[in-house]
Structure formats: structure tokens, C-alpha cells
Image 1 (cartoon, rainbow, N blue to C red):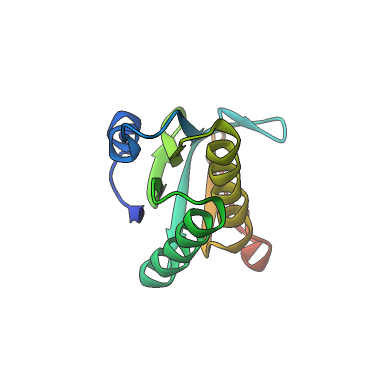
Image 2 (tube, rainbow, N blue to C red):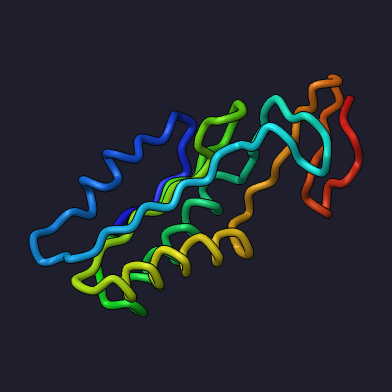
Length: 143
């Protein structure tokens, strides 16, 4: 079990290795990457910002909850902060379990909970040069 808020690129193969165990019959990997278009606007990248220690602690709680709820210690989640270009991974979750349903459920739990609970904010960079914070608490455009 591991959770990390990272400033470096996410290595999906390393996450899969981390959850690998001979007793696991199912291994799931979810990755989320920066899209090139959002709401009809061309995107060049996203700045992710967070109070790192708070975000790391919350991500650790989410991963621990998933591990306990779905009966596996083999859960890993990483969320990037800093600038992430189009096509790069911003988040990844790996989960493994002897049974596929529990592996799917654990991975889904982590990604859904972090989307609701993780104190990470994003500023989208558009091709026209405008940058806009997407969190409702910081909704004004940054130029």
C-alpha cells in the first residue's frame, strides 16, 4: 500500500510491479492523462497545485480505506502536481487482488474518492494563452 503526491512523471509499469503478488489473480491500472481539449477549447497543459502534506495525508487515507474495504494491501495511487503537458499522466491507481471484482472496486474507489476529497487544484493552459483555474473556489481567469 502506498500513496504519493509527486512532482515527477508517473511510471505505470513500476506501479504494476509494486502491486504484483503470486496470489493476485487480477491487477488493474487506471491512468488519467491531460486531454488536448476541454469544453471545446484546445488545452496545452495543466498546472496542478496542492498543499502537499495535506494532499499526501488525504491520499494515504483513501488508499488505506480501499485496502481495508476490499481486502488487499496491494493498492498504490500517485497524483502529480506541477505542470503536466497534454498526454502526460496526472494520476494513476494500481490495485491487485485474488479476484477481479475486488480489484476493480478498489481501483474505482480510489479514483472516485480522490476526485471528491483530494485538495488538489488545477489551472488549465489553453492554446490561446489564457489560463483558468478550474476549482470553484478559485474561479477567476489568470492571464
